[in-house]
Length: 350
Length: 227
Image (cartoon, rainbow over all chains, first blue to last red; front, top):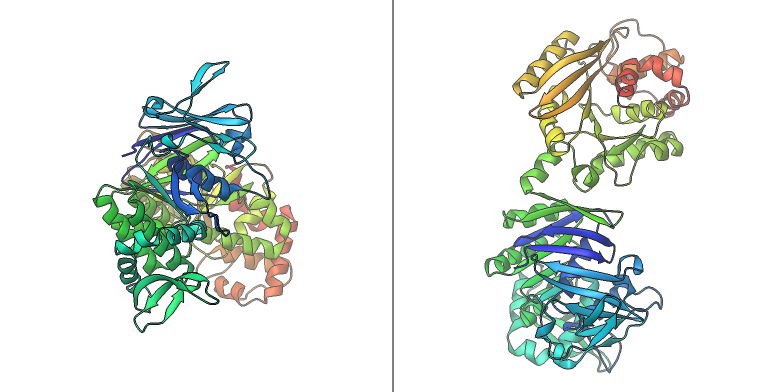
């Protein structure tokens, strides 16, 4: 379990740390580093491992690495490269540290960012470069201004910390092709039937299965199969339903020990959110750590109702310094009753 | 002085009402960024306070930003939230604005002081003016100033004294309505005024500091202490 996370010069955070619980809920204004915290936890196990997301264009489809997925999310116009992982694009190195002992470092070197760690000896292939700070051994590198990624395949599966999975409504499109590419594995494990049954409790239609079949002109689509035999394409379902289906399938597929969900309330009706809260509660019970961000107090209430020990953080970012204050749901409620909404009063609460 | 609303509901109300008077008032007074504050204004009741306070703050020039909140509780029971403001938010100055209603002013002061004692808040009265009092308070290891502003005007013959007394006085002074011959309910008098007339009165209050001061003396004197 990741109990403590410390970030130095990582994306918009010059410095900051916070303690994580079984279920951690991050609340804060826009640009208060909530997503950055999730991205750090997503990259930390190994930025160059494959994650269950693929680029949408036609073949050859490319399975994304954790780093390239984050790259895709941040890409603006045709700008490329991983400089955005370094504070203000100019820091010499960024560090993601956890539990006061382990770290992943991103070190700028020429037009590359070298990936190194205190656990470098666990990587079978670890070249080194001479720098002004001495020799740096690294397990791979990413481009500073290009989306180049280089590593020896033997290093791909090494994990520095427990596997994490990032979920958000923005990622649904990237997940669809991965699910398609791994369909036999997913279908034969009975995941689609389980998810379809689960969804049937939340929406008015009764689903019996999730399938991949031809749509029109022989082109494939993911469908929800209804009890009466008719089918609805995944993309034609409500956005909240889509993200829930995808998250359940990806979780069952990867069984990560850390589940990260950005903007958990996005597109979610309270009924759906209650189901998500129940699911998180089940995950926590089996030892999965869950970290979510939200702008919704309703979401905080629902999630905390199912997980009374939830750790709620109000975060803010001031000149690159991450500030975070831990609150209980009772604190949140008493402040609300006093006319203070933690989302509006973040700087005051901190 | 700028106002930082501490809840989205109040932020919406303040922005909407201030915009109705002028964009200048809305942008100059309502702070929407994430900023820290050491002082807060607590609205103990009333729907009209959320336009009166921005107007008074508009005239109290300066760059200081103070929080503004409207708790679920009303009037004197709002004092029960003081430990939250002081302990959890580290607020060092609290202004409570509440209507007199049909209580005697002295009764309100006695109730306030009795409530402070019940909450284990030690206090000294450091300033007493007409319908405005300032207390130096201590709660545990924390000290804070508490400024009480009681809305209402003796000169207006009303069944209950409220913030609307001030607005009705403004309407009379501007010749928009005749002085009442007997006791009135100022809330109803203000509420039933034509919307364009209300806007005109509020505009005049925003345009003239001296007129505004004449209408809201205790609010100016109390909020001035936050500067």
